[in-house]
Image 1 (cartoon, rainbow, N blue to C red):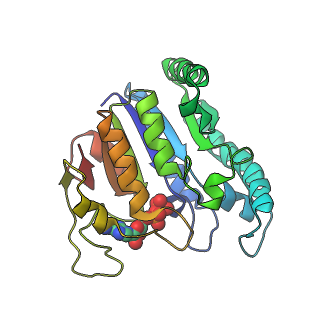
Image 2: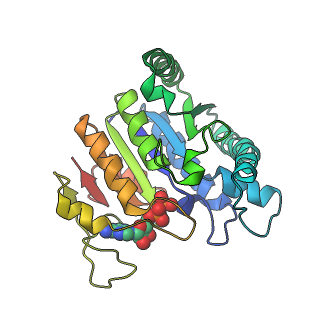
Image 3: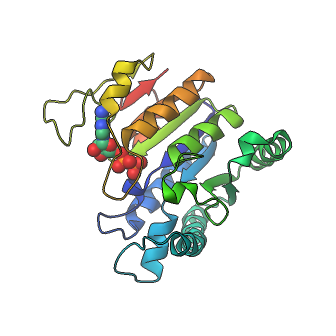
Length: 257
Ligand code: ADP
């Protein structure tokens, strides 16, 4: 895989209390910088803006009001990019912020513009960092499916830039035949070649308390990516070095083909 997209979820970027996990982000940037050094092209799809905004404003809890969440996303996105820029900068890498709304898939002209921006950034060895533009589109924060969530967004980006591999990092080792947090006998599925109704049923409902997508959105992302010929690996982001393991062909996580 030469062109890869890595998606990190809120559960990888923040502690259970919602505060940003700087150590994790530092490790992640170090691993990704090294992968770019080895000659590969890396695009990062990162959640976490609202969480960072909450930390920055020292709020006790996540607001429920949409406008407040959008304002927090605006504050947090800026701070999040600052953190990424700083860490990547330590390894002499440059990042570019790409904030998308769903018109990127609906309007051919916009789609072409976005594609050519990605091409140029990647050609120059710059790491695009992608998120949904929450100031414009309230859908993700409202959990109404449009881009819907960053799992879906990462699949869309992978297809858009014709990536060789999409890696989605979460707080779980891969896709299990049932939710391991509820069923201690759940078994990890190493490879899924076809997303059947049975597989979809294993995904259950929405995921963690931090209000992210859970497995259903990851299965939907896998379907979107593999339908367009992009393989996807779902793996645990606790140790970001797992990305290098995946790229060197180690069998970790769940591979969707
Ligand atoms: P992220 O914030 O990384 O996107 P989520 O919390 O949204 O992660 O989703 C991961 C969670 O999905 C897991 O921690 C697990 O509790 C839950 N889950 C539900 N069904 C499954 C399954 N079949 N296999 C693995 N995890 C599952």
